[in-house]
Structure formats: structure tokens, C-alpha cells
Image 1 (cartoon, rainbow, N blue to C red):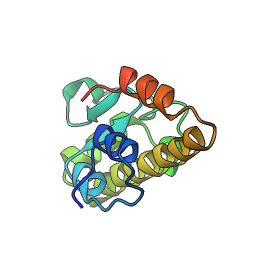
Image 2 (image 1 turned 120 degrees about the horizontal axis):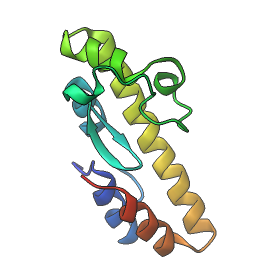
Image 3 (image 1 turned 120 degrees about the vertical axis):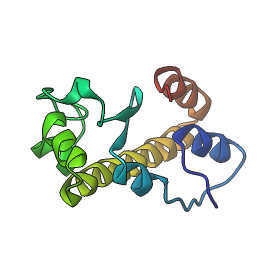
Length: 124
């Protein structure tokens, strides 16, 4: 379907869509970009060269639990496939978690508030 950005997914859900197909999480990961609650982060940026934090401190994905931004940046910068895979793992976890939280918000009758709060923090 081509819908891939978190903002687009939430807009589509609001209009009644409930199934999505997108290569964006893997495409972004292959190029060193990851999604966070704050928005998209490009790990190729120099500022992550010495950053010993995970991509997101409260993220439970394998990547965030085991690797630092500086290490992932190094791998991506050197074109090591592991860097691309780690970024992709995080992006897939992020999007699955977004959909889980979206479903919960719908079931609890607070989707509009959830969407507004999420998009208020998420910057592309």
C-alpha cells in the first residue's frame, strides 16, 4: 500500500484502514535512519559518533538492549550489514509497538488523544 511513515499510518487508521504493507522500516534501516518517539534519527550524523546511549533508552528491542548509537553508527558508516540489520530491527519493533499502542487506544476509546500526543512529540 505504500503507507509507511508513522504519521501516515495514524492518519490511515483514523480513516478506517487496518492493514499496511511498507518497505520503509527496512529501507530507512539500510540507510542508517531509525524512528524514535521524537521522530526520525539519522545515525550517519557525526553527533552519534561517540554517543554511548541506545537509540531509545526505554525501548525493549534487541538493538536498544544490546548496542549503542555510536556502535551502530560505526557499522552503518563502514557499510557493515550488521548496522543495517540492527537499525531495521529497531524500526520494525518501533512500528509494531506503534500499532500495538494504537490498537489499545482504539479499544480504550482514546485514539484521538493518542494520535495528538504521539504526533506532538514525533518530528520528521
